[in-house]
Image 1 (cartoon, rainbow, N blue to C red):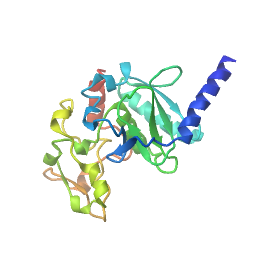
Image 2: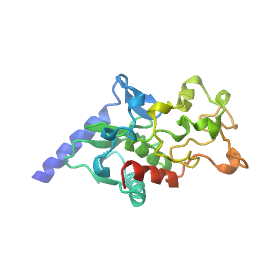
Image 3: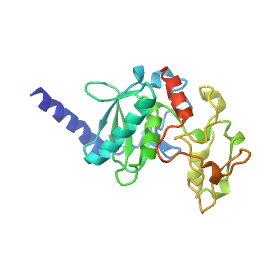
Image 4: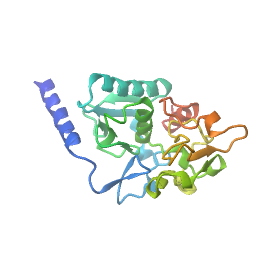
Amino acid sequence: MESFLRILIILSIFLVLYCESPSPDKYLFQGDILLNNDFDIWERNAITDEKLRWTNGRVPYLIHPIYNDKEKELILNVMNEIENLTCLRFVERKEEEDYIGIYSDSGCWSELGRNGGLQLLSLEASVCLSKGVIMHELMHALGFYHEHTRYDRDEFITVHWDNIINDLMKMNFVKLPHHKMNYLEEEYDYFSVMHYTAWAFAKDRHPTLSPIRPGFTHKSLGIGQVIGKLSEVDVRKINKLYEC
């Protein structure tokens, strides 16, 4: 009887997730970070605010049953890869108050860091189920911003503003303010899973991002990470943030 009631509770939670898109009081920052309209974006930084980190590196989650077995296995495999390189542990939610609800809404996006209670992470089944996208959105849920928006990025990459498809997409390349950010004493990481590729939101075959590094071009360096593999710097940042 107890197990049957638990199933009913889980299904009721997922019914809410399935039927409701993000409420009107929320918006997407930089294309895939879900925030409240009345929240100061610069204050949502798990690296500087311990309250936004997952307690003891333990991340409860529920995966919506809309995903088939193969899709669910892919999501779990990405979680396992993160676990194998860090001290983080993703655990299926039982009674935890704070947890991630992974479901298929419109697009690929996540809330930033631990928000308290149920927080959403969307992986649209027909669009977002690749290792790179899943890992990228999970990193947002762990508290990480985009690497190419670091305040010091102009020392490492050139943004070709004229080749970004429209003004709205240009918001995805806006730098974060120095005084609000902390990069855990790590170098700029061209290979981060949180770095856009060279042709992100490009109008044509020319890049929107080019590395500033002797001997490299956007083609030879291969900036950005789309195959779903944490870089060495990504791993160090997670382990520093969660004190592994």
